Amino acid sequence: MNRIYYLPLTLILAACSPAADQSALPAHPGELVFAEAVIEIPDANQYKHDMGNGNVAYVVEDHSLPLVKIGITSHAGRYLLPNDDSGLAGITSSMLRDGGTTDLSPEDFDERLDFLASSISASIGMMATSATLNSLSDNLDETLDLLFDMITEPRFDAERLSIHKSRVLESMKRRNDDTRSIEPRYWNELMRGEGFFTALQANQAQVEAIDAERMMALTKQAFTNGNLVISVSGDINAMEIVAKLNEQLSRLPGAVELPEIPDVPLLLDLATTDEQRGMIRFLAAGSPLGRAAQGPPGIPKARFDALTNALAETLKDPAFLAKAKKRKLVIAYTSREDTIAAVRTIMETPAPTVARIKAVLGYK
Image (cartoon, rainbow, N blue to C red; front, side, top):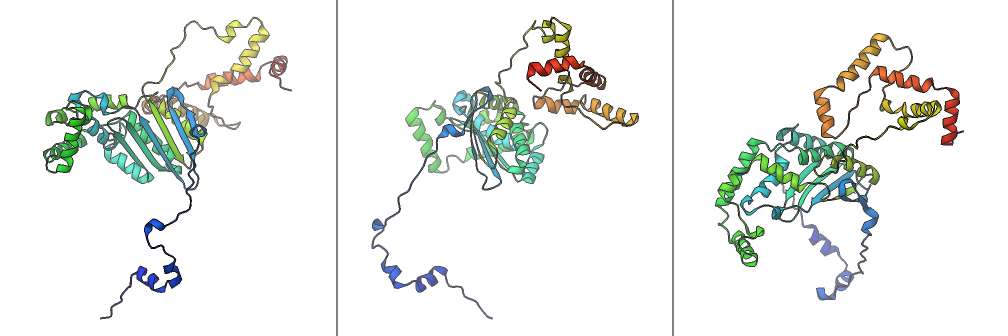
């Protein structure tokens, strides 16, 4: 039987190296000389964005690869919990990622991330909480949706929670098997006291008492607007990602919502002449249109009715409205009759009134 032998590449290179190169090597590693390392620390302020609701983001564009990484850090952590809640932070960390969301089972959530070639993680530590995202830039929007679904609408699947509790309880039985885990625990107790949060160890009763309600309360406490620092790097446009993040952050608790102010007059109420009222109606007529659906002239009535009825039914659909509510979107449907009336108001405005509006606005 023929055999092929492969000599180590390092031996071949050593044999072929000129003697001059060998003699150039210093006699001792301490004699090695290296070029001066120049480290330039960038000014963080040039990457800083003050977000809505009191959060801060640092965004660095890097288009060398089609990848994006986002990290969300909160100052909330295990230290906020009472002593009898030991174990809650650790289990919540795991269940946030592994427990699914309101709309997706744990298996569907995992499958969707695998399909997108994205990864999402969450961690509630002693002094801080974090959630991270790694995604291809083309898949960023959907991955970002999934990240905030995980944070705002975790399912904490009962079956996976039961499995995770079993694993935690089993590991508790072995936590005194190795001195490498015993020593730091007792060191913490000696340094800070038995009642200090870094020295606390969960017991069986505490683990078994953990449920979805308590995990949800901790999650809301950890991911609260005004308490977040966000880092973004990768193949993104800084202003676009800031806008997308602000939209997602509106889903978190703690956002400032201004109540409606009563008894505020409409602009039309302040007009004193017919010309002023005509100008206001012309300028305001486009507002009800919002995002209007348009088509060419001559659409058959049956098709026109089918399209407008389908749009009306969609905007009343409970599933659609639930999605819009989750995204904090306001749905204000304008019927086809009101849309036509608004267009007529614009088209039938007298020419002198339009000319007056142009003059006031500085249009020629």
